[in-house]
Amino acid sequence: MRNPKKLVFIHIPKTAGTSLRLLLESNYKETERRAIYSHQDLDEQLASALNDPKVKCIYGHFPLRPVIAESNATVVTLFREPIARSMSHYNHYSKRMNEKHAQLMEGIDSPEDFTKLVQSNNRQTAFMSGYLNQKEFLEDKDVLEKALANFDRLDAVGFTEHYAASIAYFGEQFGWKNTLVEHHNSGGKKKEVASKAVWESMNEYDLPLYDQAIERFAGILKGYEGRAPRVPKPPLLKRVKGYLRALSSKF
Image (tube, rainbow, N blue to C red; front, side):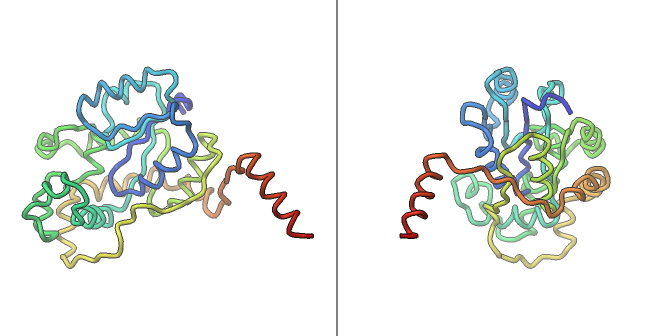
């Protein structure tokens, strides 16, 4: 384990990362964490956060950039079964909840159309390979090998399908006071009719990447299945008020 006091969480979209992000916010003070969800001057943003001694936790939708790989920070991420992740990604974008999503989804009305969107293809491989330019990523035939090689730079890995065990594992590794599992931003129950081949076409690299991740990292989670979560005690004043309220109810 590298420097446990400088944690970098690579938030791959639609991998239960929002739920984990909220956990991070409950375990680190606002001054101790840095959220980075814009790619403008990304490497400069990352370098600034990595070099700031007050910052203990950095998280956001950014790939495993060289500035991260070459640092002494502890790097973690969550993976998800690729076809399930793609379906969730499509459903999320289809809601067009903001202007960016509306622009991206203009003229895209089906999973078949979604395959044409650069952001729909092999997202987990893209994040692990370190690419910022997605067109260059799609043109590089060696990206899967690059992404797999970067597994060596990951200090802890979780899986959406084993979320509770993943959180228990992370909590033990990083001394978190709160490991209570809650689910957010789940994307609803919308189902899309499309052949399996359509979803597989978006995940040519992600499918073998995920299989390798399961083979390499999932075994460690078995020891964390079924563990009771850590739940922080409420503030003393709140506990005292609760005690007095309970005491007064007895009379």
